[in-house]
Length: 350
Image 1: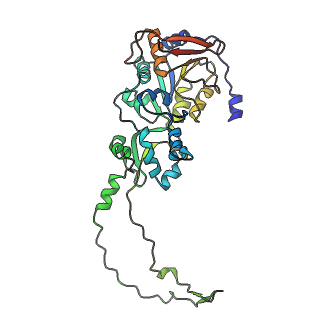
Image 2: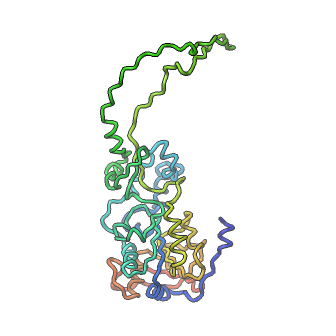
Image 3: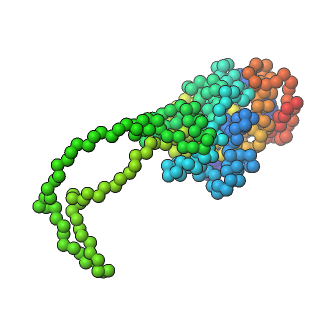
């Protein structure tokens, strides 16, 4: 990956340096690709995963879980889903609202400028905000639905919310119904006479003076017995050890790469592949803008706007002269340059 990053190292486009350059790009570009992460939802009380002290993984470490990422490990889930459901309810919001940044992405869609929103979030708030399914790639899945690991029956995520928020394992209703049906009455079986070929062989003496009898397998009456259990409803989240949806790769390769004319990366540290590789794989002449609380140092962006995502997009909306539901306030934010050469700007509430 280090070699690929070096070979694909992108040079900053010198003509884009300021927040007003970003506003002009928003006004003129028609195919804007938006990559979002947990930072666009934190103002709604949904924790991100990797922030120190406040992130989900930090909270799990404080509870004594040595490797918090194991909670989202597929094999660990298959072996014992209790660990996941005891802790993951915190990432399963029951919200009917969305953040101003979600509203900003919806505004881009309404203005027919949104090419695709690649979200790494699993909270499904894009659907609440009204982002169209054909413009949304939920790279890591979401809580929107869950699938039985035994019979593949699919349910809405809302149907298991109460169980999950109590820290309990949700089970498949179809499996439960099937197992509750009375078993068919067994038919009488005529006893089979021992075949002349079914024999008990001569006992073999072992070293400890005990004997083993080699019984023909066809005459064995011992069988394994497993108590039938209903399947576990696994949320349709992409766990560690699972492939991303095929649609992610198809959409990017066959649709977006040839059309994108502006990239907005909002509220993500871009540390999880393959989403983190998207900016490197795009044509270098396409301008790229980064919006987050902290600088992303492993990818070169043309303009970096540092601050709360909701505040930054609110200022962009205000300067563009647009109207967005919750996407900006009447008064402007304070914008200060922190590194003119790199195009870094701090954006804070006025």
